Length: 484
Image 1 (cartoon, rainbow, N blue to C red):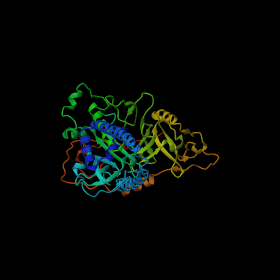
Image 2: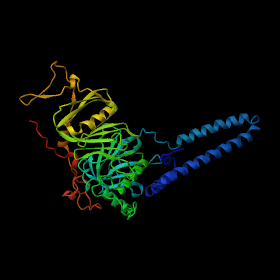
Image 3: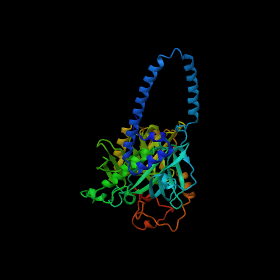
Image 4: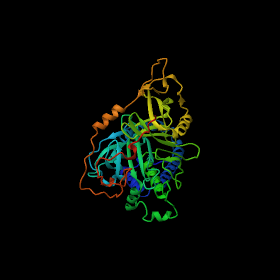
């Protein structure tokens, strides 16, 4: 018995395409198709079992007379089966995954699922289309995730064998948007690739604009809002029930293509995600009122400002620590964190350091600084819940003191060797210097009125397809209060 849609790949290519087309239009039918497939498999097995019993009974009386002949026939049959298997299409065993190049425009009939006019921050900074589609390989229809240029429908980035290629896929709020009822529906969709050298796919999507797209395509009824007429959206920072249905649709479509999408957006209609903290500089959500499933705080890494994410474990992923969303975006599993410590503690801010062991068993210390003291406890509770050792009192991690001349001085009287602090700011600056923004495409009208950038409103609506986009609230500037 199978419980997912992996059985579709065992069907003939034409039938695969028909099944995918039906599921795309009516996602709920995947359960019906799977039940039907299991029923036919069970019936076939029962027929085979009956047939074997009949054949065994009839052949028993002739077994002695035809022993030699049957032995010869068995050998011939075995050879024929081996030859047949050698020419049959072989299933994809996961060794063929990662980036592929597609140089031709996508055929509309191969498209499973599409989000148009998406503002990407990584690995490119343009407004593109995010598309799941099918390609034929070894007489098999395989789903592909592509970032597609809307002007020519040619993918610029494509990933195949998605169940192996994508190690983490999340949809999260944006700091600054989550407190604003008019911006809360602009959120981030993120894919981390199962290859450390590949930048993750980070983009912002507008759920209101997607709702209009889905209504236009007939995937949502025109009167969908009227079904939730009793919902009071004023000053309500959770998702509208319609948007929860859209996220649920995403999850099922992503699952069909081999990706487990984890939703970290607040909601009460379908998802039981509740804010335990929500302001412009930090947020946290819980789905069990016991522990936080995600924590997001503003911080710095060297001179770079960004957002530090703590993700708890779930049914698909181990816990993660992530810093984004300027290149290079850092992410590491908590199982690779050897210890942590707190330093540079002032009345208003503090720093947290993590000793991370990479795949070469090399230890690197990564420091995140300028974190608001108001969020110390929620971060410390998360670190303790993950059983990460606290080395704050280790001589190697003695906090820096400021002398009378205003210069930083290590409090290390024994002159002990200091552990290396991993800093990629030089590499960040080089990336920013070398970045070439996408050229603006002219003469293309967008079907979507809303801007996907987190600064929607204002003059952001002038952005065009294929043009460079701003980082929005991910890269917002901070004014740090000076301690006298």
